[in-house]
Image (tube, rainbow, N blue to C red; front, top):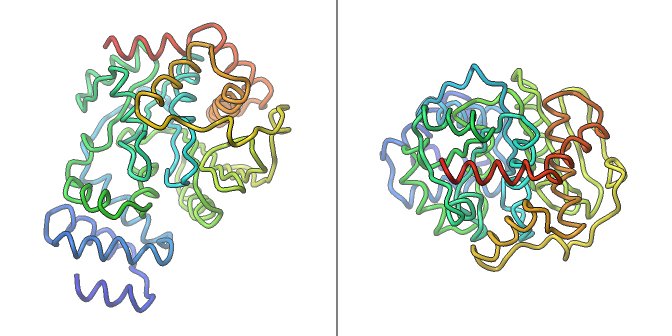
Length: 328
């Protein structure tokens, strides 16, 4: 590790094989916590390169618990986290709206690292059971159109990294890796990132795959479509900058989309929105993200996708997906 660190501190980059090997060695407990912390911190000075990210990604996918969902056409909605905006759980609520509309969602998530209310915190508090059993997950997907993949259950080799990340308390390249290492390898993906450099990095990485994808970055720093400002959108087919008018919606005040100060408050907001009692700003934001996810999967125009998402929420189908998942 000393040689690797010295190389990184001199602003050199790892090639694909080096990046893959070092992640596998970290997973095999070859290095101490201080060495892992130093390695993570080196990438605080710069984003990983495309080759480094692809090496890290392939190492984690090689080591993860494998799930075969090839019979389904699935989508994942997730963000890198780490934007520091303390919003409610937008992408997770949007996942249930997409599921309620009949799409198969394989939502990959974790406990909050840079906040106290990651998707796992909220769903666990609501009674969703975490499992890495393939048959159970398939039943969830068949009965509720969504299954939740709690990352630590699928990436047990990374358990020695978790306390280091928690102690560091800032976003790391593992935040960047999360959306790339869904063990079900969904064919469709909408991913929010927290800066423009990362959006471009993801664009290059996803274009080297056969996924249908949308990468979003709100220019005021949100890792999702917040409707608070313009956003950058990168897909298989286009790269644009737009704003709330893209969805025929009005701009939203950032204060109107804040999350709870505790897991309970966050869970209450979660249920309130899904059960049709959210504020206009909250509803518009989740419908914007949901409709873009549907557009990513289907290629339909955004107006039609917005109508599909709205029907899922207004009819109670989105909320029913959550209730069914809790029952399973």
